[in-house]
Length: 391
Image 1: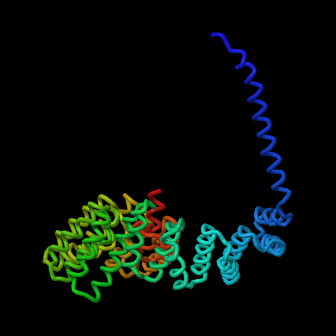
Image 2: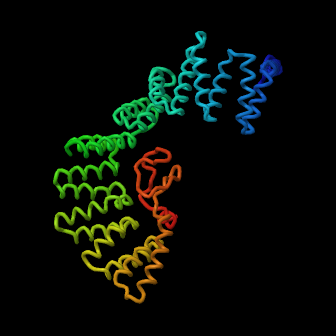
Image 3: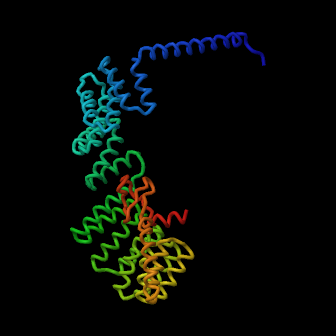
């Protein structure tokens, strides 16, 4: 292939153009950096060194020189909020909003930051009002997420449902689990104050949102029991196994009580023992242990716990075995066994807790929403010692 002469001449020409463009960019960058106040770099350096107090002082000095700088207002307001000085952050963002020359995009940004200030300060009514002004702006998604947090704090579950549905429809991520939990919160309240059929209607919506919602299934069985239909409740509670086998431990007590109520306690024990073989759990052992003592005696209960200890050795399981041993221990060894059990029990009290998989918050009881980080369904239905043994 023969090359045209203009192609050979074009190579150095285009190379020269590239060199000139690069020099222009570098000169522009140098010029911009020289135009920035010296305090800006001081403040940035303090931030990088995790010294927010000194960074604030530096940015305040810049604002004295250039009070019209919107970006510096945003930086200063965020620093105040991070440091917990919400009143100062609020004043900074209110001053920005008061400027008549502020462009629309920056006005929306300032309003969003002001809403976050109110939220951090616990002024939920003002935060809600501020975020509602942003639902038709470019900050709509962020505003709806903040509103969702507010409605959960205030336990305004119907409003939370509307916001979560809006977020989901806007493409901001799936919210089925949260929506189902909000309906469950409404249903749980309805079970106390309204006829069971009202709660069941809400739980139908919860299950439409999330077919795998264990909590909705458990509460549906509770509503059927409140209607007097124990057999239907038993059928519903047994569905938990299909949704999540480990969560069977949360419904074990209900199942056993239900089978006693319909006069088939042995069927209940057999069912729970089958669950125990599939997914060992201290909470499940507790229910089966008491039922076996009631139906088959202490010796059978001891054998049950020994088998479980061989499969899943835990101090919580050992505590149950010592409890069974004390029931028929001879007088001369009862005191020694009792002392050992008390020592084991003191230690197991620290282990018999549920732990959030997101923030690590520990609690004696099971929560559907973590009290520490407010996330939903982050508690595994097993105690911390069991999880450590499994891992």
